[in-house]
Length: 324
Length: 313
Image (cartoon, rainbow over all chains, first blue to last red; front, top):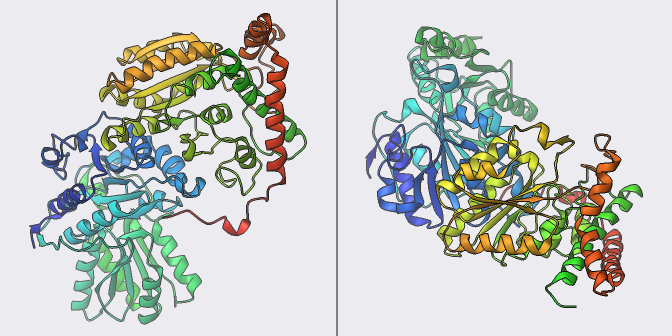
């Protein structure tokens, strides 16, 4: 098994898909010769020729051509360099890609994968810091995944490309150059969906996804040192979402549910997770939603740090929650 | 009657006109609901341009797309059925008047977002480059779409990669309800294409033979690897933007002038001079349309139990 960091794992997954699926194309701004602004697509153009190419800075054309090519039998993988850039081209995903299979009764389809990265990193500006996954979970017809580890990133990317629906894969750029991990690269493409129990404990179930998973795990470990064990359920796939696993786990942890995400709280996907648990009748007492404050994200790290939950704040909130 | 030539063109244009006029009747009778955009007056464009396409080529149109679907060979009955919300519609009633597709007939969809399908054609051409088919793609849109950023992006994308895409701009002088001349400084829309390095021409869009020969020339060039082209078809809408648009923004004199310029009046006058029974051509088209509409009206409505199907693979 190769030892790969997150970026290397995505690169390996893309390489595998380009090798196994001749109908794949990989394109976007600076993804070919420059190898991507975060180096994720490095060297792929050398091995796959004109199937990997750079494009104009035209998000609408990138997404729209992917829709058209997918309708005609290709399987495009396209990059939106920063998730914030989706917002100039949402028509192509929301009005176009999401509708094609449904409206045509399956006579046409749009099996495309959109790679992007999101979230805050030190000194990133307000237009390069948003967490937008909930916008896409609100759109029936789109699949959404937010991975957190090299293995998870590899598996999610392969599953996304093999999936016949339009899939948006949200990376978090702070993970790209993280620790290397042994990554199993040979397995059969897994169906999309599912969740991973990252630790178990009886005091509560904490649901999380993406880069926030690492902070939640760190906080949970410290809480364990204080004698309180919580379950951490990582749910990288937000559509399809593994509500059943959440409900099973919540039922096994005294009906206590916390959801932690980097996106701001109001309208975040955490609200949906909580309400589904409420509807399922598995909650006991009040749930906890933890996310960024409902405000814009400033560039200065001291300011941004005051708004986005870090390990310390998660620990504090979980401590209060589990002792309430 | 021969398959090509002025008589065949007149019949093809009449099929579109009769279809659209039947829709007006159905709308009035309450059988046809929703926003319906008729292409009455613009029939020469689709009849001429679709003749330049082969079976494998892709065509992406707009919500004023009934004529393009008919010219591409989509049968009339499932087309009526689609607009009437019947299970037998080309999309089982899910697309409606403004957003249906019929991929089996090389019609890859209307689009009810102005300019929304233009980049799809560029993608279809990109697919053709990689699947070995040699497919070209055609997309048609109105003058209003020229002011959409997404269209500019799509045109440049095709130009940058020499993709075989034919961009057809039907200039009927009105961007929905507003004159295009009031919304641009330079009325020469072809200049936008030439500025991007795309071969472009403006032609009389009321002459099906001229549309056919012009589009065919650019289609051949695209097939030979010479990249995209832009053809502006000067035409006119004899009716409102949608059924119910009373067109307060147009003068009687203008509408009368358009009535003389429109393609069916012109073709009829020319053929009548050479002794062709044009009334028989019109009658043949209307009979076909009436029969298709009657059958579609008798078709079963879409089944509510199926409303959630086909969202995902």
